[in-house]
Length: 190
Image 1: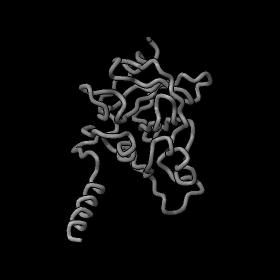
Image 2: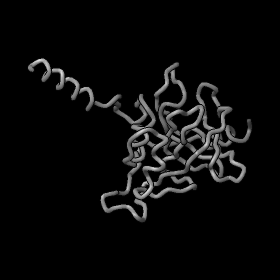
Image 3: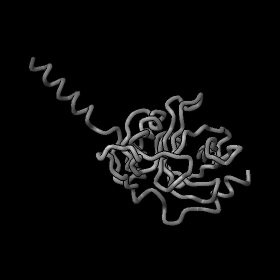
């Protein structure tokens, strides 16, 4: 019985400890979901692809990007668990910047945070339903087109219960000198 108690104590400690600790949001190494939750303040849990439906009735959602909103990528052939990222800057109607984790490889390893990377709307109607994402391994926009469910805003949905609070994005969401020109070149020059 004593051994079982010790094992349960160790298991509880492991289960409650975060996967990665970071002094700064940008030092984070891990999955996209805990990163997006910390960066946006939006308190949704579970695989990235589930965020869109989970937000219904809790957080306002839409198809227009806003700084601090979470863009949700559904499950797809290339994204088996989906992906979530936080909008850090709006560059122009079809170009914005994201801050996210676990996309590109940094020093050969996935999971690192990336700040102010380009997201380009390539949808035929300009509605952010299909995008290309900056991929560090290519030092440019990747060749893949990804579907997008939409954007989750940090404000309560109109029908949300009173317990849902307005989210506060991290102050480290964007850099002090983002490269707007580079982002436009990424989107339109390739």
